[in-house]
Image (cartoon, rainbow, N blue to C red; front, side, top):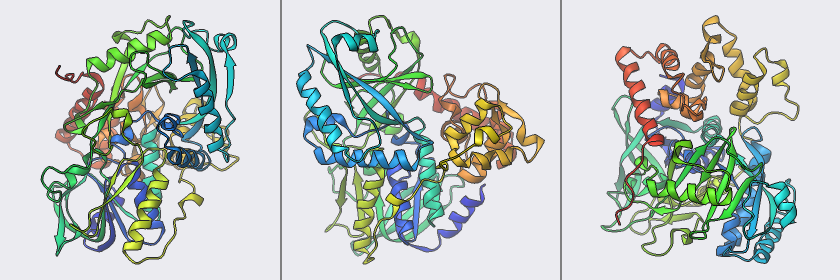
Length: 540
């Protein structure tokens, strides 16, 4: 067990100013902001950091061009401002990404409306470092994107947003920032019920899922930011029949480069229903999707269904006629549930993407639930939430996170690839994953012959990197190491080629016996089923 986990467990006997339930990007952002303001904070998650919705997104850091169609101008401005912050404060994780938006005769939006949207998008991002959009006629568009369907093509616009290839690593770094600011961080710790006293929430019962021990946690204020699981946290607190969350399911397909594949990311309207879809270069492959369907059930079991796969493939093949993508060409799929506000009727795409701070007064004091929220705007959501918490606690504080870097931000001149004795490809991968902290990883790798040995031949993964994620980044399971720390779990084989060797390193570091090692391997294979197996589609 890691030293950091031991310390957090010891701190559970103390009283906290704030308990944050949910360790996705938004919960971790709240913990960071609150701890940086001087509040004593505990953040918990029943799984690993960022293992829920934050891991299953389109991996975009974007202003939300489609929100302009819903006239949510304020949300777009907020998103664009936070996009710029991430580009500056976490450049090792977040990088500019050019998008092409084709104009077709049959689009539900006229090309002049789309061009006007591009101009407004630039105006709202007046403080950006990215280039302004450019528009092209039909002939230039065909030259830029030769694989694009020419049927009804009228032109295009090229604009910039940004991408976070490893959204999981973004969550890990926010956790590290929260911990450095003084927060107690405890993954695999489940809230089994809120504690109440005279109409006020005073904390929660928390089960350590590693040992099974239940701890009674006392906190002056509690924020429920469990994403699509928020209603589950409130199961004993909401009036019968009341819901906060009405999640929608988004599925993505991962494919190899295909005939006609674009050099840019593509943002386009589906011919069948007019909803926006994307084809995004990602890790040398392409990420295509996503869908937007209402979802009921455990968000942890959400997976692609046949209808979604057929829909995405058909629309992609329409846009790129030479692609001829089939189900056999899919490397894997992944699906997440958006924690949107409950709306019993209407199109899923019409539900607001703006975050909501749900105050449970007068029924319950000392409790705030977060509904909605986007990967891009986690910092602003956190600032809004902690402003409310601080006011309720009588603490006059202001957020400072807009002026802070994430822990892995490299200095302007970072010569790691030149100074490292590792092969160039390995050094580049370490910088993409750890940023400036790559130096700490390589120092551990170089400390012994055992730690310098390669355990992931196709990626160059070394035993020392695995140990680093356990000692410094709170990895406690095989899935943590593969899927959310080293990131080799996103390779085409989903990390299966290295899992036995990595499990052996984990066993030595974490003290697993043979039975536990076998259990961890089986658990990882079960986890991978979500990427491979289809979920039954909706009943007609």
